[in-house]
Length: 437
Image (cartoon, rainbow, N blue to C red; front, top):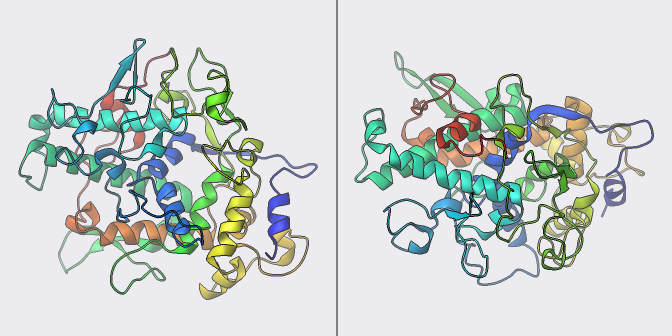
């Protein structure tokens, strides 16, 4: 495993170094990452794990398509999975209510009734899943007044609300998330806005240079096994998510079921009392209040991700070791090889900071490239290009996406800036998580 030892050993700042924060709200990064279909990061893990020797067979989630269709919300729809929906309010999701707060709907054993059970793995993610459920319900509640602004008719209210939710979410993915993560230069190189015919209106068009397919779109292993795992570098060790509860770690090493339930943010359980999220701590929702920023994109990982509980990482507790091992098992090319294939000058041995010369694991290379070439503010040219081309290529290949169906479309829901739409706008539309707890 060339370079793996150096990659693992570089998870803490060296003497004189300090991990810096980047002026990107944590929530802006977290939301698209965890809501794309199953969650693009979760979907990425599946794409890699399906190639590993010990693949789990019969995975009921393994047949999902690589689309930004929010199937982690909708599942297979009300007819096929009615337990996700409210029988008394047709077309709307069930919402859990207890202790004067909202929670994911759960059965008697506290298992969340959601399209992808892993979106309950920690409190912040579960509250994000809840916000998206409420977003759909809020759109459906206002569907009559929203219908006139929609360019494409739909056969019923649920289908129209679902498309409104999906298209606005897709806009957030591209314009609120991807732009921040890959940088303006990379995004503008892969997504152009220009007329398709002389005299036509300006529309968006994906122009990937490297991501192509013969029969059907797919998630490349360079994305799933390396580039899209950059988010592990952004995670903080602790988060204070509302006014009442102190800052807590995301995970503790011991099994969640055996730990003090008020000592960490681990999920797969009913929301404790007074644990409702305050989204202004994570998104720019209040004038003059800066939300929690992400940590820089670099090669340093916080200790809790090196000692994951068995519910989150059975067998190998270190996320660094899991990522590097997965890259080797997938036969991923080195970072230098990918840079060369893109026509880019690879990072030097000195820039890579590894103990010996040789091919750098692609995951490590993507993190180090961001640190060296972009100051940790966003991904560098290799990592950014992989992420941007896969995101936009998959979106353009989806026959039901806005980029495919109506590439000149702009958001129609209320927003701080007409014609735009951000995660902050989405949260304001739901009215959830705005009050102090």
